[in-house]
Image 1 (cartoon, one colour):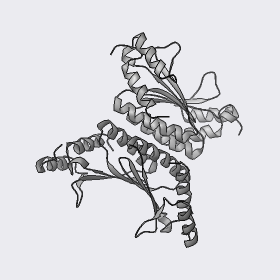
Image 2: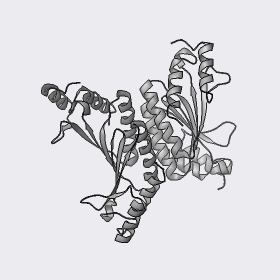
Image 3: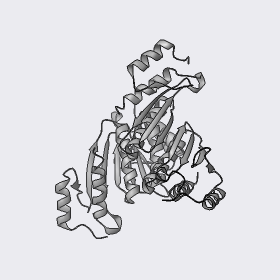
Image 4: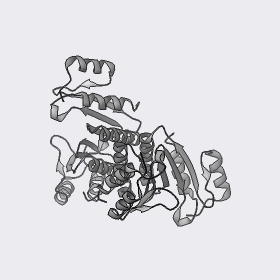
Length: 95
Length: 95
Length: 95
Length: 95
């Protein structure tokens, strides 16, 4: 799977402004903040269901009510359509 | 822990009309419906967190986007303050 | 999707003796018992991941450390290959 | 809540050698590796249940089949008995 070309990446980041480039890596990320741990972990459960379904998994960190998701495709060494698909599915959770 | 007296039970059911008596048992229940399995299971995860925290667990059934929760205190043979506390905590999830 | 023919159903139940016919319904079920609620719910989380991945969901009940899973395909009015696939995936969790 | 004194910290790390000091921070961490994402996330669900019960939450990162847990008590600016209690409870999950 090829990495996203610059135009496709720019289009994604334009359409989903909560997602950003990760400094020093070919990856995209989004920061989420919730009212408490329970809502944060429920969100993570939903993302886990998406990840297994799409067979593509995030690199993510949770600290109490925050979740930081980084997406990149290991085998491609950067952002691919798989990452865009997972990011859009996460956006579809309407958080 | 004693079972709820009739006045306390009536007060609870009056305040939380989604909860009902279970026919043929000393128990209370509520039916929940969600958009899909993902939202239903995320809700279950939040209820699981509450149940472990309160050390009181539901008897519950999930079928795709629905969750049915029955509460009763086994050791007391019926509805107690523990059930009311868990039911109110579940209501606090604001579903 | 057609319902399993009697030979295929018998073969499944022979290979996976923990699974049984459900009385009065065209469905199969298995009872699971765990050390505590935490292990039971962790198992449920794994089954939820499988269910979303296979796009086929169980009808299941949890009471503290027990989980009862019933499988049947609503659209077919009975047990189909989808149920067998989910049951085998659950068995693959090696519980 | 006071930070652990050096003797108590040394005793903990001696008893639980999978846990280590975090470089550059007053915190302890453990790395976990699982067969796949499903088992890793089921473990995370069990840790989430513990965290809510103990009202003390980890700073943790998951990448597919690995989970890295960092424990420190924000209000105390370092490792306290709360972290030791959560770490021991996590060890009790027998992973």
